[in-house]
Length: 591
Picture 1 (cartoon, helix red, strand yellow):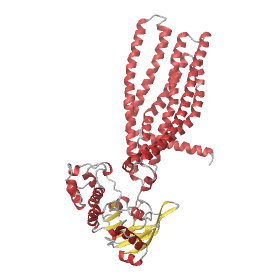
Picture 2 (cartoon, rainbow, N blue to C red; picture 1 turned 60 degrees about the horizontal axis):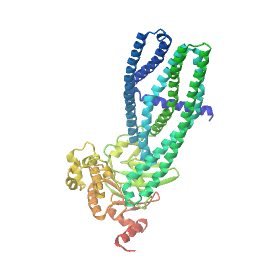
Picture 3 (cartoon, helix red, strand yellow; picture 1 turned 180 degrees about the horizontal axis):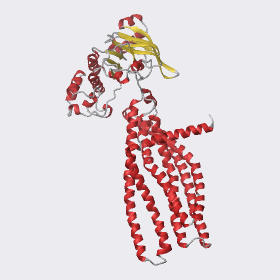
Picture 4 (spheres, one colour; picture 1 turned 135 degrees about the vertical axis):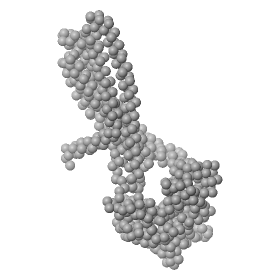
């Protein structure tokens, strides 16, 4: 592709980005107009001072018109009071407009995250996503408020000030104006480096946040293994990258500002020399010369505002680009003709299903399964064989690479995602509980459930008595990720959640593998009650818990290598037999 084509594409992308950004102003058009009007009046009031100064020096003082001097001074004071009120409005309401926009962006981002597939979260760390929702959007807010003000008002101020300076002396004004291109060239040459430096800085900050999120979430593991120093080392790696990135960013920013400041200082030298020569040759009066010196900053100020705005612009644009990267991530979508599954009976079929997380690494290879309605089907085999992947494909968390998955004879792609997942309950080894009450964590299974239905679900999960023993009963807060509960209590709470949901299909992904034997017996009783009358897919670590399954499949290296009842598989003396014998010897102490 040619450079011109690339430039066109870049301009098109920039225009698209700008259009998306402007769309967030639409709900606040009235506030935006008031903010811009206030900023415009502030700029106009700024012109009054040099006008009055010129009038005093050229007319009022030579004529000793003290009355008008006082009147002009009081008028200026009144205007400055109005300016103060306008500046308050700009700072408060203008920033609030940015906050409103930020809130909407954050809402849009969160809502979009909820629609993204499992694969997105497999490839993006939580801390980095959090950075985009907080730090990046804060920079966007600053741009949303100051961007239009700096662009529109500064441009108008430059026009007004240029016109006014021209009325004083057109040639001296043109000399000053001729210096502006040098300022723009220096600004443009340094801007690109600053933009890249700040983008790298943001990426480094996201890595720090991701590292902190991981370390804080795993603080109990860190303490248990006394690995605080290791975590510090890991953190310092990211911290060092951030420090290096910020060093480069501030170096670029320093060159940008120092270069621009030097050129503006040259402006003053030019005004001093050129104006002095004009005054010496009688081409300008002393009062006009004095007013010009006072007024020239009225022209240089907005130019510098626009140039310095580039730093904020780069931060805001980078933040908005990172926001758009997530917003442009492809969400989960139903097929155009997808239908509601209604209440499924629970018949599950896999027909020649293959799946790969990465293109070059298949996790499942030509898997065929037929799980009848109401049957208990177990998956066993070595870790990494593909058992959990099979469980994730049934609720359509991932799309199969080839083959078909059918529920009650209907291909899964012909059913809406929501209706499929509504019919499936999942109990996993790693339970996620919200920092909320016992009641609300159970209610998550069905948000419209009554308190009586929640209590019944808790009773069926064998956790009601424990909840009632707590000081606040069902209103007891369980802490972040259920930190105040034991492993068994967390598991029973999650089982109560599924009881409340009451789905026809149940997936138990190593639900008891992390529990001690006594707790496992209690949990198993609750699970047996939960499985009754449902199609159940069990991923088992302890083979003794699935001996009575209607059918067992051995999954190894992405394939179904053996399938049958416990007795049938034992008779074959294949992989299942070897796994069972190995566990039996481990449990009895026989070597």
